[in-house]
Image (cartoon, rainbow, N blue to C red; front, side, top):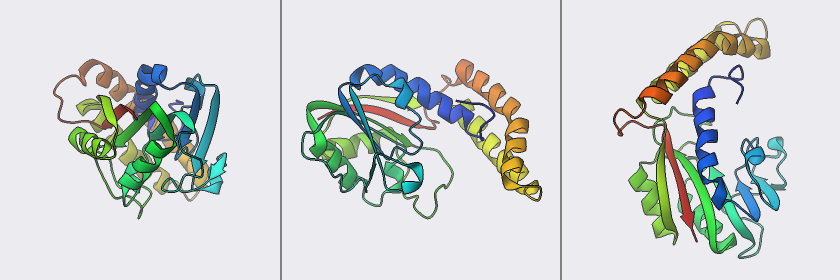
Length: 220
């Protein structure tokens, strides 16, 4: 994750570090649901990788909604679904589709936010505690193997401060050119991201109530 690319270095870096802990479960044929820019593809070691997203702008392998995945039952060995469920009015519909296309015994890796600002409005409906994400996964028929928090208090403070300052700078400089304004804002906010990332590595273990989000590995 490039520290000079936007305000979310801390979050994206920790998400990358987290998926590395669970990558051993993600094997065989894999489906990336709500793939976006496919930030984790290079971290995976799979026999085949397919991406699905509703937006043609990100050029997924398949353009489709996650509530209606156009693949037959038991098609994939593993699935990843990161930072998507909060944008669905009925996230259980997506989970049931994931269960349908997973082979028996297959694994799904899911991340969800607990503390985050409004984004991709108006399609921003939910925030999850670890108890909430565990509940809907079990309700959808999955066996939850592990739930681990992403970030802590210093990560949370750092991400929010950086995001607020970045947006204020980019908006204030947008008269020059929006793309260049964002690049300048990223340059100025990079030291703040780095400081709080280092603090997070040292002190995020203080307390366990404040988190950016949760990572879950579950089995069909």
